[in-house]
Length: 230
Image (cartoon, rainbow, N blue to C red; front, side, top):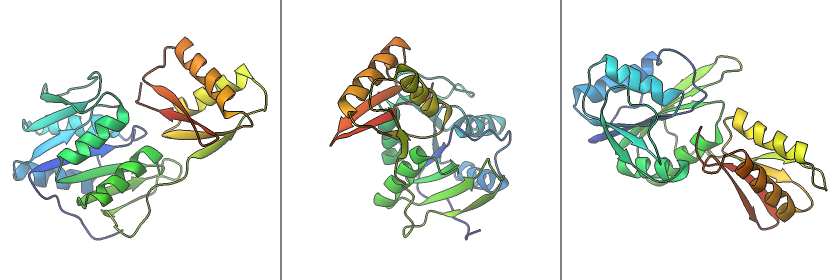
């Protein structure tokens, strides 16, 4: 457990993993939100499943009105009927815009999610203070403290091996893998990235997942990427 980090500035961002399924926010997180409320800070919060909805429920229970719900193409949850703001057309644009708009942040990071890791690295680059609550659903262990400027939070994308030829069942398996995980992207290890990318895109369209998943074929590699949460 590291030293406590306090909120600062006029705008506080609340962001976290969709895999956070705990019904109540941790005490250390609630204390800092209460501090922001006491200071009448503008609180920017997302609307995806998991941590963001726990944040919203807590803010509503406190009767706090100075809240902005950040979203991308559509808004799925607004517990307090607060003001809303579109920060982008997809997950990456939304979260980048929310980070750029805040002065400090509280981040709930579950299972070393690569999506949240990228956001922590962005906060570091922008020199914005953040309180980070790390949690593992595997062993129920938690740690918390200030964003560490010396630590590398980002990680390499997970490798998934595909067969040399076109295997539609395998393509469907790759898509189900990323949908069921909290990963931001999967690096598909294959002999023909362009061909695999073509069929992945085809299945994404057939499943009406455009805007949720995307494919990036670059430098001889094929990446299956999460664009936003369903």
